[in-house]
Image (tube, rainbow, N blue to C red; front, top):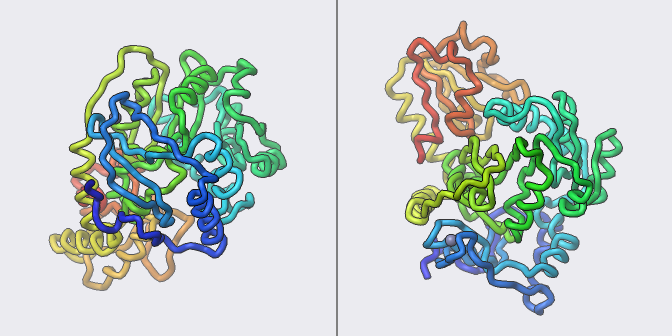
Length: 418
Ligand SMILES: [Zn+2]
């Protein structure tokens, strides 16, 4: 047995800060596991030929969760996982308190979801060949924030979720939501031009069954949008670059772009476009599945990430300082809106190559020279240092070709970490 490092030993210590509510429900969950009220079952690998290597014995909450990687395909799974009865009981009783820390719908969460869909999910779908209008169904829609965004962008949008409380909240906003599971809902025989499952697929315990239900809800030429956490998004800053923070008992799978596409392929979907973040757009396609074992590649990646784990900010500042050495004062503009950007503002001074940064209206820090994005053409720097934790292709799409013409060097801090 070779864990990624000693940090992954089952010592009961949480990696993230916990609230009192989380602590209380983590204890309850732990007790139920100990007394046998919650039972575990061994899972088969999706490749049908699982040869598992244990890489972690605990999750970010300090819960005894075993994470394995399959030597035959590279898929990372929680194994054993809760059996079906225990899994439903867990979602009914502890999940919301442990995972979301608070369990009531709120305006903040609703509008957060909505703005994420307007700014990222919908442009992603439209820019990569997905439908620009038509019918949309979101499975696992929670309060309907995404559904509201699709409706506002001209789609006929509906959503289903198992949480009565969240569905009622969204319905109160006039949205077409149903408290239902996908297989009962599929009995209506309605077909959709687009199905959305955002941060849902990684929770499925039976991918074959769930994906077959989803297929039955899709129009023959329909699309499926899948958003899941991406293992290889760690070096773009996800989970502060710490794989241990990514692990949680409710996630059955931890995908890379390739491992997701391989699994989707096996169950009759082809990938139109997918990023490591992970956002992917899929179509129904029954041609023979392709297969690539990415065990070696994924293990190499995880070991590399493990070296920097937990101190990604320091690493980013070191990389940026290196890069800035080759520029004169005022020749560089930063672009990004995340926490990493605030850390980098400490590098700004009169003599610094950093002239300022472009900002999104949402999070404009004070006392820093800023340029709104529309001014980019008149404020062309020599180097645009990209800090945003998206991946390259997504970032570059945020600028027009003309913005980047004229020999500006685009330097993406996170890609430098990979
Ligand atoms: Zn496998």
